[in-house]
Image (tube, rainbow, N blue to C red; front, side):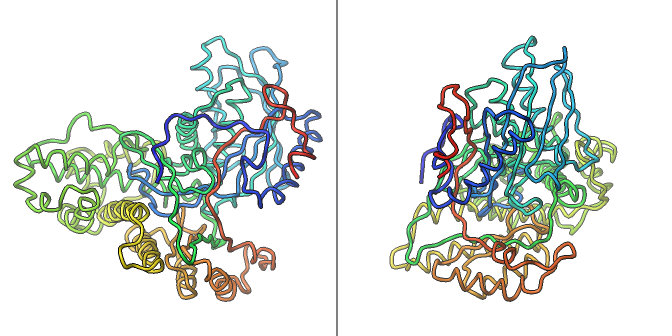
Amino acid sequence: MGEPVEAELVPITAELNDIYHDDEIREESDRWIRLYNEFIKVFGSTPQLIARSPGRVNIIGEHIDYSLFPVLPMAIHADTLVAMETKETETEGCFKVQIANLDGQQFPKESWEEANDSDIAIDEKTHAWTNYFRAGLRGALKLLREKNGSGWQPRSMSIMVHGTVPPAGGLSSSAALVTACSLAVLYGQGMKRVEKLELTRLAIESERAVGVNSGGMDQSASVMSVKDAALYVQFAPSLSVRHVEFPKTNPPLVFMIAQSFVKADKKVSGPFHYNLRVVECTLAALMLLRQLLPKDEKLPNPLPQDDSPLNISLGAVSDLFWTNLYSDEHTRKRYPDAAEAGVGMIQRLDFFANELIDKVLPSETYSKKAIADTLGVTEDDLDQNFIKKRFPVPAERFRLRDRAKHVFSEAARVYKFMDLLETGPKAGESDLQFAERLGDLLNQSQQSCRDNFDCSTQDLDLICMHARDAGSLGSRLTGAGWGGATVHLVPASKVNSVRNALQRNYYHDMWVDGKRLTPEEIANAVIVTRPGSGSAIFHTSNDGIRAMDLSRHLK
């Protein structure tokens, strides 16, 4: 199952087979050559490095990373490449940025100058693709200044970007872009040893600057994944990961990804979807904390702080409850059923999801005033500290009970899924029966995402239904939802059946952005995926690694 991963460095390589599976290299070679040659064409020089970070598919554990519960994603083949060259600055006190994209028509070239001590402004009201570079640049420069001291000065940069992770497709294109940009800046500006955990934390905070209260799963998967293993990510008491391999079964199990072609841009829809859910989960944590305290006891001041986006999470509050249960007589008397739930994490999470939440959050929705009155604070306090902190949401009513039920039940499913992977089939259980138990957890996750978290759509539900009917053992949305992608656990013998069913029942005669899907787009809409590697630096200079000979390295 793998040991926890200690502090590791982002790998530096001069071989593409360190990055991709063998059968993927030929597909990638033309792209890398085009990126390299286009850099020379646009900037008149060769890049010193290419930073690479992949997208991810989340197997299970949706919308619970920002509540500090573990998740199980894996990196995918699709990725973002950032080619970079740095030069001495020509203008005193400033450095220059030139950035272009291989898809220049969709993502136009930009250039600008920044003061050496600039914090890098990001206009959250615009949706420029370069905002994600700016976010990575901001975080990387902050870290470089901390490490190099106040006299350090950035070098000017030329950057060429290309990504194959579908934008707004539920596979973390934004995390791949921010992470690759952060890594390129760190290494290009002289930081030759980049720790994976340090890069992950930097990327999490950097993406929040773009307008999304990111939890951290996407960046963890992009940076710390390895080939042929999923990634079990824990956020408490601190960020840690371990690599997880799936047991061999007969027939073999594969994961398929199916696109809905419904765009799910977390930045654009954040105030009504993603960021609203972060606020709802935070308010649910506060209400849960208030209800678990004696009536005459006020909320702690200051509140317990954690690493979640708004600094208090359902995970932290549930930990506090179980600590108090065994140390505080009042808590034991008030919740006698809790002790009977057992000491195992799964039993505790099931108790919260199936019993406690209904008792302490009985209403379907809560107004801002009702929440403020219960907490003993003003509505302005709620706005300032939570609802309108960082990225304001316009909601006036909040579905706290259903959001909390999803978080605790989904966290329990992650632990149950991990238990199955660690123990394998039971005595007398066939491989198919074992696989069906894994699939059931994915199906339960989709149901909760639909009913409790309200982040599914009719399109996602339809894809999951057709996939199950054709042989998928478990189907669910992956990523934030509200469009994007779905993931399916499928016996290898059923791959063609599932693909054909989706092409026939969902993609046939489908129109997107006023255009009918082409046969090539339909063929690429459903893919079989496997765990890929995480972030890496491909060094193209003679600084420690021999110069890249494209004709040799990209065969």
